[in-house]
Image 1 (cartoon, rainbow, N blue to C red):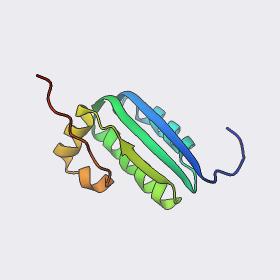
Image 2 (cartoon, rainbow, N blue to C red; image 1 turned 120 degrees about the vertical axis):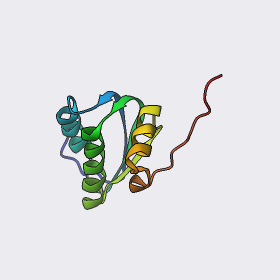
Image 3 (cartoon, rainbow, N blue to C red; image 1 turned 60 degrees about the vertical axis):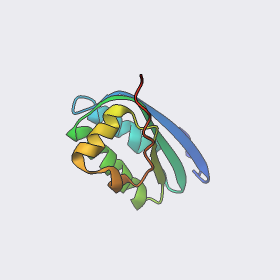
Length: 106
């Protein structure tokens, strides 16, 4: 990473595998590195296959930290595991990102 100003940067960060208590510290470090003032960051969640309470807390922290530093953080391409966790926790509206529900396979 450079010390150059982060003006008008757009970053896409794909997350893969489990976003759980076992990987929360590693993911938190990664998320805090990509968040910067006046940037746009998209978290691509299509490959997240497991999301527990620690993962939800991490996403909440990232969203709050991004708002604090005027970073536009969006969650996109929600996997079925992410959608299920959002529905069970009632946190879908907290994040404010559109969730596209894909039709079930036949």
